[in-house]
Length: 265
Image (cartoon, rainbow, N blue to C red; front, side, top):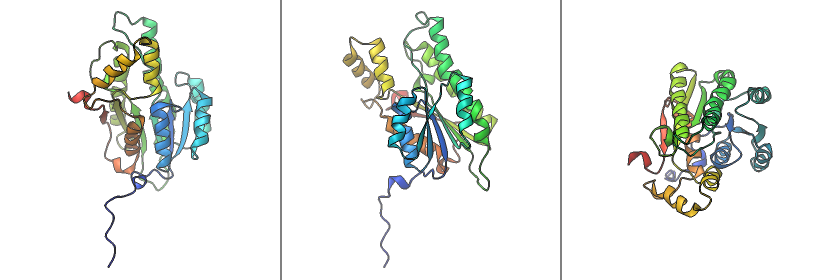
């Protein structure tokens, strides 16, 4: 008699990406770093694209199927140089971004412009440049190119003192939906909208804006998410892996909140 199948499958067998080529922007730390490791674990070859080439190279040393790539998402010249190094791309993860604290009254025009330059124009420039590769599906394959944009709950709900950031992430949500409609059979485009995730991004925010009351603010960040904790980069990376896989072939133009119940409350 044959053994009954185990009810506990190996998680590494789910949502495989063997033979796929991926590029992650802002990939040297935080959500980007976790995403690189997760996609590589799934079998993909991954470009670690970051403005901090040294950090990207250090990460590449620990991930066998990954390579470091200098990329400034605000520079068409930098993006063109990066594009020249790729021969194929199946998965693009637009993760690079910056934050800002301030109401419309305290957000100076140069701060607003910088947020839009990185968080919005950067997504536009990178996506536009790599689109030809994403649309060039391999021969004899039903797979289509996949884009996963890392947006934010800030693009879905209003958050006090986040005028420019909410504006920029709302634009990423709109771009996601528009691209999914523009290329419905040639490209799958989805966005993940995390809540507050424990990462260098958040630590840098605390250091810059709440240097004298970090512990108090960290407690507030945990409390505004009903589950009572910050998210983990690996939790966002796991969703990226699913969205990039064939199991998500019917998923496009969708938004996925990973926010501990924040937007449900």
